Length: 171
Image (cartoon, rainbow, N blue to C red):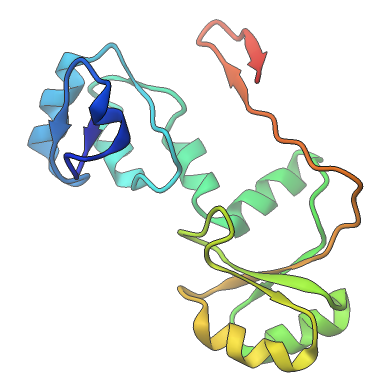
């Protein structure tokens, strides 16, 4: 396990550990030499870290996948491009963009950061037009994304993993 803090959860059960910054090229090179494959547990590992590691070790998933899932706009455009339906959304750079998006998508809607948001962090539910200004001011970094509410009966989550041989397993 490689992490910048020595109390990272994986450190408690790993056979070996490397404690160093995500940008420490020398520590990353030592780590890469000690492992067969590099993976990551969450998408907030800097893409630059995988850029350093990729020439030294197999990285699964790769830099492009990590960089795409770190930016909600890039992620939504990618999914749109491959035909995966997503909630209606608008890119928000200014309060005027937000007002126009609310007019287009309606309320309620969810205003989200494009980076570093997960598990409800970096989000604000807008139920009334007057919720918009406070949420826009509070959420950072910009740009943001406004997503329309999606009516649903149930929610489920699946993770698909593809092996180097192309085999796919869904969990």
